[in-house]
Image (cartoon, rainbow over all chains, first blue to last red; front, side, top):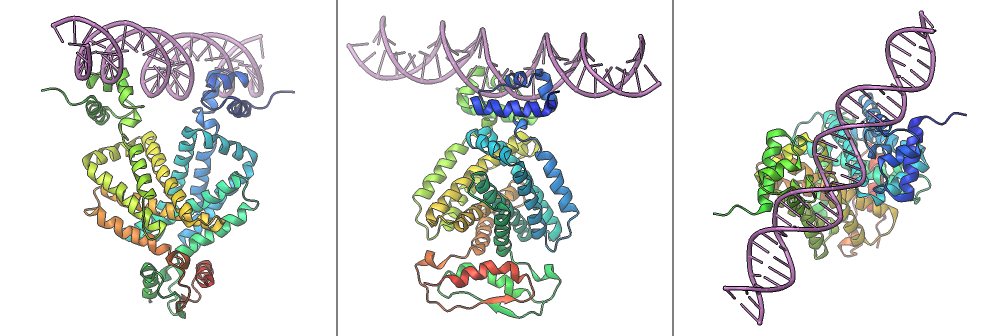
Length: 226
Length: 226
DNA sequence: CGTCAAGACGGTACTCAGTACCATTCCGGG
DNA sequence: CCCGGAATGGTACTGAGTACCGTCTTGACG
């Protein structure tokens, strides 16, 4: 009976020690020792101490990038929503491992910062994808892309964190609902849905209730003639 | 003629060396030496090498927190928008220093990550403030708070980065416009504007154009009876 | 003017992450 | 059996960050 592969042994040892003594109190030597390997071997499998906890962020980012590049969804926002659902599913598959990681990142600010930086890379990818997709180089379009990306990521994080905290029994359904919420914030423009400009137009609002705030959105809807 | 204060000398030396050799190629010893100070003294003024570049993020965060706590704006989102404008103005006051920092963070990923982590702290603060302000513990409200915070921060970052890149001549006006855009995404609810529930109701949409996506928003508007 | 205490400063020594490099061992094909 | 490459372990180094201690300055007070 041979031992499990080195990479797995290292990860197991690391998580066990982090749970026992805490992240900062655990040295790379400790991890290597428990995994019964040399210190150099640790750094062959993981570039840093942090990477034991976030092993495949790079791989997942590449996967999402490919997904977007081969996407054929109706709108950029829908494509991105679909892509981000993949990320959530990835975490769900990790199961308990994801929750252990969450407990660690909740306690250790250095790890939380790293996690946040990773998420920002997704957001950047989404922003660039949406901006490219819109093909509109104006400042307004650029801001819009930025907002869309931020919303998708925020919605994802919201659902993910709920699940990680054990507050969600059906995160897949929740993320779908959250994405619908986001989609609703950014109604598709007529040019995006194939220049059918002749549908019935109806407008709904309550007078006397921050009509001012609603105006830009209504204006956008109304001005979109063929 | 005495020299400038130690803290200033250290910062000047650090930025000069970062420009000359790059961030990673500069050691703390180098900085201390150029500032004509001992190495220990460097760490008395800055907790880490990175902190020379981001000296007052903590202070600014506290300032924003106070601002929010003493705020009396009409809605949570407006209060947060006002607060975030303060952050932008802070950067504008820094002037060229902010641009030098931006050039550094653009090149050195470790610094970019740190910057992103700081921004995330603002976003968290905003999210908690909005959630508290709404006082609505439901999941939908929680998501809404998350989205609002994300939008405000994204809009701010968008304008700030444009200015840092020299693409904006009037960032103050741009951030106001961007915040209007964000406000427009989140129309105030009736309960927020004083329980006037008896206004005229009108509804507008284009059939055949992602009506599905618009539904949640419309439903929300319609269901808000007294 | 002398004294004393507090703070600023410099220096030393340490831990630990991460890198570079080299020697050894293991293993499969020839 | 032999050879070559891959995996491994060990050693030595750099540099960030921490702890601690001795020294020097400074200013208040008698």
